[in-house]
Amino acid sequence: MLGRGGGTAMPGKVLIGLDPGAVRDLSANLGGGTLLVSATNGKTTTTRLVTGALRAGGREVVTNAAGANLLSGVATALAEAAPRQGSTACGAFEVDEAALPAVADALRPSALLLMNLFRDQLDRHGELESIAARWAQMLAGLEPRPTLVVCGDDPLLASLPGEGADVLWFGIDDPSAGAGTLAHASDSTTCRRCDAPLRYAHAWIGHIGAWSCPACGLTRPQPDVAVVDAGLDGATGSHPVISTPEGEVRLDLGLPGLHNVLNAAGALAAAIAMGVPAADAAAAISGVPAAFGRSERVLVDGREVVMLLAKNPAGANENVRTLMLDDGDHDLLVALNDRIADGRDVSWIWDVDWEPVLPRVRRLTATGDRAYDLALRFRYAGLPEDRLHVVPDPVAALDGALAALPQGAILEVLPTYTAMHEIRADLVARGAAGEFWDAT
Image (cartoon, rainbow, N blue to C red; front, side, top):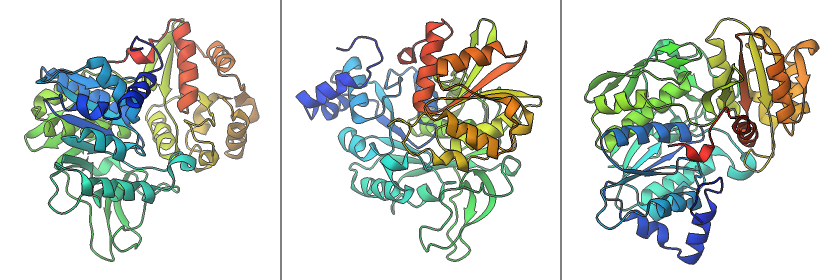
């Protein structure tokens, strides 16, 4: 039942069915404490980074590395590790934002890392306010109170900690990293205290930025862990400088884009909250490779392929911004599915600002269950018909895109969640990538 394989949630479902209290009992043996990581975007990457930081300190870490982030997935990870009474191991688990209250109630974490809330899978999660309300209710009822590590640049999250909460705030303090205006489809732009429109000095990612309310005076918390220099270095990596209560540290990330810089800042802050010295955490985070499907680079018969998960407007917009960091033409494979794990509603593709990158697209292949919806979106955006190829089958689409790839060029793949797994399965079959459950 607990052998290696792709069904990383099923053993946990069986365990919970047999013993509903098993998760609480097993997690009680994690003497080093438990960290839960939740967000709409960046959970898997950030959990991987903070797990690396915790392990660098010599700790044994129990984690759901394969990304099964419901209670059943956490149960599987705990059952596989089987921490015993008196264990000094710690837990670091990514948790689906809708599942967080139930998982937190079962595990009673010592720390919670709350990173962002974006519009995603509206047919399953509902509006952002409903998730934020459930999180606020969860925080009010958790005993003992965990340390909260919160991105205060997200106005929705900044309002959640109650009076007297132990909070370590993180965010960005590099004006050069921000956009001058909010993206047109930004999600949460009104004050949660008085409902007035927020004002932004700088917008980082979607509605995340240096915000304030001109009506009631509410303003973003000053970050304790702050990115003072984003250090973006094209589409291959970044070298951010981050201020911490222990002084400045520099990270050398093999992960591109401002979103990954913010993910790394959150991981660094969480590691500090769990007792890892900032310098040690920074060194460890710098050495962690990309998670499966998230800025992951592989070689297929000598041709480079990079996977950039794009499952909602905020994430896709950041991928477009990341692509724009490099000069030259782009060869894209965009894959859109509408399955339960993706969300049935694909209207969000119209809220992605594809237009800036399209003049530099040499060839774009649209694939997936909703390939023709993508094709319509790109034609409306002005992509010439001779540069657009519609191949609904993702394996055939990958074959065609690779065959047309010029020598020395990189194929950039932007898939939704289930499309990413389909394409990775083909890459595994070709021997170009490892199984996702082998992630550590």
